[in-house]
Amino acid sequence: MIDIRLIEIKPEEVRKLLKKKGVDAPIDEILRLNQERKDLIKEVDSLRHLQNVTSREIQKNPSNKEELIAQVKGIVPKLRELEDKLKNIESSINELILSLPNLPHESVPEGKDETGNIPIKYSGSIPQFDFTPKDHLELGESLDLIDVKRAGKVSGSRFYYLKRELVILEYALVQFVTELLVKKGFIPIIPPVLVMEDILYGLGYLPELEEQMYKIPLDKLRLAGTSEHTVVPMFKDEILDVKDLPQRFISYSSCFRREAGAAGKDTRGILRVHQFDKLEMVSFTLPDKSWEEHEFLLSIEEEIMTRLNIPYRVVLICAGDLGFPASKKYDIEAWLPGQDRYRETHSCSNCTDFQSRRLNIRYRDDDGNVHYVHTLNGTALAIGRALIAIMENNQNSDGSINVPEVLIPYAKFEVIKR
RNA sequence: GGAGAGGUGGCCGAGUAGGUCGAAGGCGGUCGCCUGCUAAGCGAUUGGAUGUGCCUCGAAAGCAUAUCCCGUGGGUUCGAAUCCCACCCUCUCCGCCA
Image (tube, chains in turn blue, brown):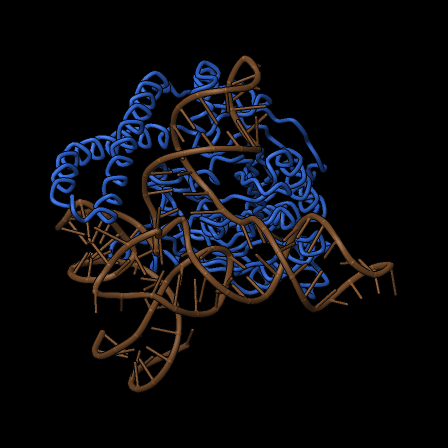
């Protein structure tokens, strides 16, 4: 959530930045309510003060008891009334502020939607085949690595069975990435995949992703769409020690997405599915270190792609296409020969203090003062899409697939063939 | 799922016939003193939120002051950590089970 003080001090700047994100913010309404709130607090506080003083007097001077009680009883209804009013105003303000997305960073380009995104870097060489490359499903089915048909029978569309070497390759990827990140100081973690709804409101993903998340109504729980949903809120309502920052996690979990509104889109294969496994990086940092951290997370994503030898490009996401809590975001898109184009495999966001403010995650600095941390998250590897990229980029004319060199020590085989 | 216990400050832990309790005591932390250094010892200090005033161009920080916070939300009362209700969570035992 945006700091209301920032709105007070620089209302026009906030308005402008939100406009960049395509949001027409009710700044004036917020300021008006906030003034009303402050006036009410003054009134309520002075009444309470009077009440407290009188109550103490009753205790000290029991002789005047009856009279004093009568006196206080006079102010109680008024106080109740003002308190209710204050509560209402506070929740109105809250509602308004919570509906505002995070402010975009100055380095974020203008733009309405994904057409405004800017590729800023290309890396790796696109493989040249002297045959028509197959897509991952064709490869996967002929090698008996992917079974979408039977999954449809059991779970419906957009589900799949991963089989044989592809399973081993998933384990290899998990180990490869986890080892790499642990070496860099990340704490490996396997989070719960079910989340309480309140937490998702705190993260700013509900109600935004209402349609996108699986719901378990009986228990008011949701299936996490990414482990960001469960790792970031770990420190809800906590005050961290400055010595523990930055704190970095590499999380491995299944992710669940309803893909509502994507009907008919990417229906082939396992590119867009309801359930997939993902390794996700989450960082908690000092406010003045988060931009540095953002670049650091991106650099790790690039390192992983480079070491897997997957051609990719980095895309800077424009203001209009940023997620609700993100102040700046990079995507990485891998080259997929089966589609003859780049497709998103990673994303990396700096959410600044937007989530920590909502979740009340703070740290105490060396002077003992308390501030909000910054939170960041980035895909280390989305297993399904990584497998697609590996299969399609490393295929041979006979339909076999070469295992990327870095994975061979983990997978213990070099080629997938029948 | 059945039965019971409990949720207090960074931690441990007092506090229920309602009244200066934001909260004893201990540990830990910080700062002093002592010491050649460390330990011990001695002394002091040690939560968060919100508002207002001073300060500032504003914010932050600082100082002062008021209000709120003893799992969460309501209620009773002049007054609640203490009484009542609802909810959440934790623990123990039994049952079931990957």
